Image 1 (spheres, rainbow, N blue to C red):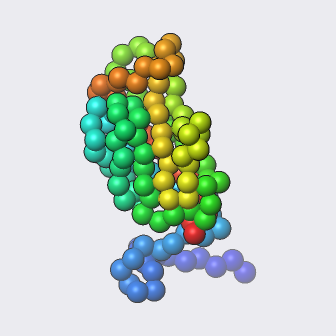
Image 2: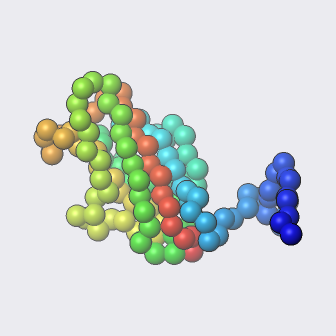
Length: 129
């Protein structure tokens, strides 16, 4: 016979922390960042930001993943008609269990990272340590 569980709030056993999701595909961390600033506009499970220049930044996670083998999904919004390419900077091998470096490029000039008034949206999925 199927069971139904109706709850308003789920918390950890200590009564205050959020429930840790395991064996599920829920996002483990996310961030919204303006590329013209050195701050995060909104986030979950992000402890800090490394600003390495316009369009070049790193996210440090509050809780590390169990390895560097997690998925990063990202997109960027431009207020003009430019096409934006967004990628993890794997050329520097900078995706680690506790952080990831990211770069944003215009599609028509791979070395251009000077973007203003745009947003970058990053989500990560994987198993936490």
